[in-house]
Image (cartoon, rainbow, N blue to C red; front, top):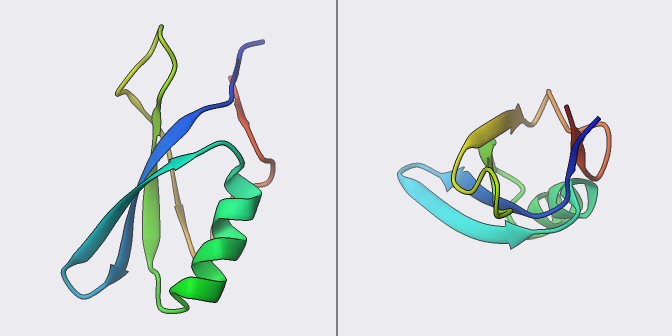
Length: 73
């Protein structure tokens, strides 16, 4: 089983406002979004490792949050 530990997240934080973050821990990233941007809606997760750089690997919303800090597949 492969584990991806570095991500690029594109996040919708307001109407027409999208931000990009480099993330190592998805759980801490969601806590940051809740604190800094309580109205955030969703974020797409892209791989930032050498093998799968730039491929979308997941997406999450306020109601569908990540269950672990890394993505396994």
